[in-house]
Structures are given as C-alpha cells and as structure tokens.
Length: 382
Image (cartoon, rainbow, N blue to C red; front, side):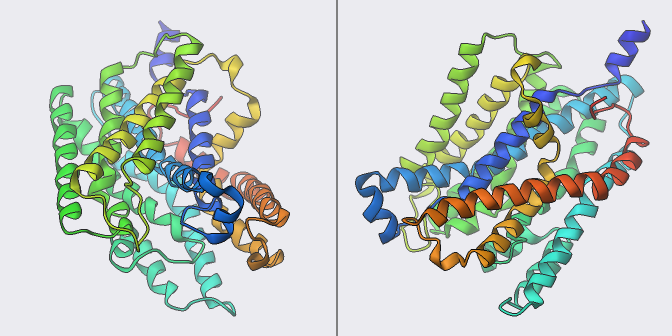
C-alpha cells in the first residue's frame, strides 16, 4: 500500500525530457538553417533549396511541441493532485510555476536589455523587454514584428504564462467531460482566429505570435492527457518510429504544401490552408508525444535525458550564444557556402549547452529546491 501511495504521488517520465530535447533541437535548427529565399543558398542547393527552406520552417513547430508537452504534463500533474489531495492547490501551483519560470526568464530579459544598450544594440528593443516583462510579448510582437534582440524567442513564455492563468482553475472545478468541452471550445476559437487572419491576409508573424492560435497545441496536449487517463502507450518500437515519421511529415507538409509559414513578401495562403496547417502542427505534436511515452528507458541515452532536463536554459540562452559566436566569427562572413557557417552553428550549440548547464547547476537549482517544497506530485528525477 505504501508503494502504491508513493507511486500515486510521483510522476516523472524521463522520455518527456527526451521530447524536450527534441523540441529544443527543432527550434535551434529553425533559427540556424536558412528559411527564406537566398541567392547564395539557391546557387549551392539548386532545386533542393525550397525543400531546405520548408524544412527550416517546419522545425519551428518545435515550439508547438513545447506547448503541447507543457499542457500534457501540467494537466497530468494537476489531475493526479486532485485525485490524491481531493482538490487542486491553485496558490501552490502558481508558486511552483513562478519558482521554475520567473528567475531564468527575468535574467534573460536583463541580459537582453544589456545587449540593447551595448554599442551596435537597438534601444527600441527595450520596449520589447518591457512588454515581455508583463507577459505580453507575444501580442506586442504580433503587432510590431519580431525583435532582433537575442531575447526574441522568449515571447513564447508569455503564451505559456497565459495558459497557466487558466490551467489550475479548469482542472480544479471541471470534470473530465467538461475539460474536453473546454478544449474543444479552445480549438474552435483558434480556428476562428485563423479563418479571420487568413481573410484579412495578416502577416505570418501576426499569426504565429497570436496566443489564441497557439492555444490549439495546448488543447491538443490536454486532450491527449484525458484520452490516455494516466496510461502509457504499449506499442512496439517500429510503430513509434512510424509515428515520428508521421509527425515530421505533418510539420513538413504544413510548410511545404500549405505554406503556413510565409515570408512577409509572400502572399498569405488563405484561411483554409492556415487552418489545415496548424491542425497538422498539433497532430504532429500529439504523434510525437505518443511515440515517446512509455518507451523503454534503455533506449534513452543519459546525455539526452540530462539535456532535456536543462532544456529551459537551452531555450533561453541559445540566441545569446548565437549572438556571441556571430560576433566572434564575424557573422556576415559565415555565408552558406563557407565552412564557417557550419562551424558557427556547432559553436553556438556548444556554448548554449555550456551556458545552460552552468545556469541549471548554480542559478536554477536553488529555486528548484524551493519549488520542490511546494510540490504535491513529485515530478523531478530521484
């Protein structure tokens, strides 16, 4: 009986750390690979260049995977908390989220302000930092476009925080059937927004930064949690590999066939391709999660699990690492034809890992220890 109680009060799946690492790698590649037509790339790759551009854009759905994973895990933990404690401690939930997200997030924003004030920086980026600081970065970026500051990717934290405003209350007061209904409503709202944005021919970034659009992947993660009901998929490895291939195909076709990510100088694909493309993005996220959940720990390299554990730091620091390596290697000389192009990416990734590892050990760990004291369902490794 004691063993069962310990099991009920604990939920840590190392394969989800591997999913986090995969999501980060996809995001990193989306920022490092060429995604818009470039004459230098065209001259090297010829007819394969459009495939490379579409692949780079498809890697951007690594962020969607982060969203779906976050929703799945938060829902699973809150449902287990409700089953164990009889309710959901909303105050404790927010304390845990603050201790995990805010310290590193605001450190990243502070570094971003420093970059903006350095010679060659852009003072206008400080306005972005101000809106990011109150978790409105996504909405501000949807109106004013993306910032070139290394803090640019942190707009997604704003979307995460907006999701956290709803998550504990939904699980606390709604039964499973009503939660499914709520998720269905979220999907309908997301698609209504996509239909409208397609009709008015909104820019790609105005669509991508829109919180309502991104909430579709949060809904997908929650629905997967409800369908599995705490169970793990028991499927052979070959089926898992097919699912991963299917996920990649969904993301690639959304960009290559439906053009859901289009440059500012390209024409909007219209409402229905946008709706279909973002649905494929959410489906790809679900397929990826199912492919990893329940996989044998023997198939998970220790380094992959560790890097997934520090993936928040990897995400926060990777553009800063690219900024530093670009300055050191004279980024404008690192063209696609040059070996420096590959070297710059490798060094940026290595520096990202170093920065994230040091941050996790010396900056984030004290906050994680405090967070653990407010946990009802333990979700950290032993």
